[in-house]
Length: 148
Image (tube, rainbow, N blue to C red):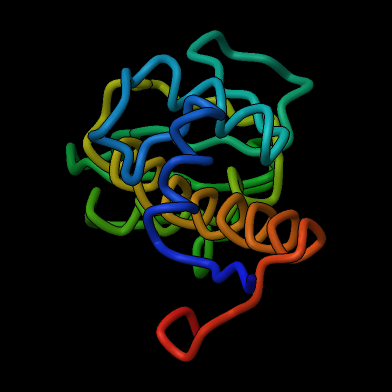
């Protein structure tokens, strides 16, 4: 009797591991802990000179707000470290957290950080599904054309 991989089988294994299908499917603290363990990042709101990357808001001399994303707060590169729009920060968070860095931010509740975490969770789910598929194949299950 042949055994075939199915989406339901994979979903059941995800549930057994305490993993949701999306970031919204499980408790946010649990999701964030899973992401930290998987990618190896750390986030702090306390200024740490030992952080690998810094993402924060700053004011210009003439009163405008800009956003900084840098690995060296002592040497800001105007062309690549300064952003005029807060919306650009979700890509910055996504990149540095996905790289497993220790990140300082002045707002751990920001929409941009949450967006990045949601995107990372999608990546995490993809990685876990691949792991589960590999395990199931080792257990004798076969891929079907629907799984490809």
